[in-house]
Length: 309
Image (cartoon, rainbow, N blue to C red; front, side, top):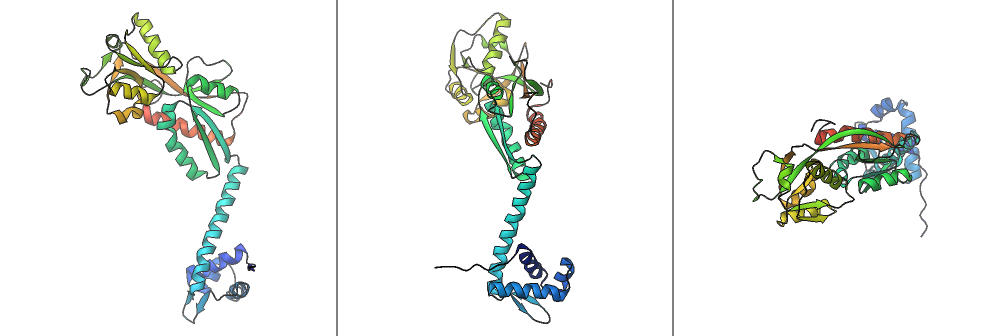
């Protein structure tokens, strides 16, 4: 079956919608800057091409017919898609479309980026954001190899070829079960962890690097440890009574499912500095810059600005 589609322009649709909204050719003519006779001719011609009567006209009112109501529904959808498409094109033309790729720590990916991505998807629907949650050193490798535009990681062991912009200080806490003697304490000293079974992150983790360095400075280290790479697995080990854990504040929301408690670690206080990393010789696109600016505004709201821990 061959369907013959009527030839009607976007302008014609807009005029018909204006008449339907105003329920008056006189008022619609004023808002469209046409004479009433010109508007009436345009609508009549559209009805002829559509082979359908769109409006019931009387001397007092203009009301859509049943077939007119269906046309109005479709026309609104077509014009909305048209405007959305032009908006996406304008964003792409201005550099705010396309894809921004970012490699980041899992704690940042889970707690900070969802709200940033949601905000940008509303503001710039033509912008796609790909998030790779990974270890700190892998994030930098992906940046150096050109796989991502930006990395969000810690300022530990970075090569001289990258530029690091601090965003926030992420202070370490001790995480434990509600029935542990640490429960109710305002703070716990790092030295007290030495005598506890400890759930520790894998050696490739930036968290492990800081905890090992802290114990090295104390001249003591826990004798009984169980190791895992994933934050959720660490939480599960603690919940199972296999030890306590040292973790930065931003990781704590990923442990909530295990109903664990926490307290600040002191003597010393240990912070990891989170920041945005990019290559100075590889300028950020406007879209990547917009993303970076939104992340820079969001991270301090979650855990405080650099040096605030």
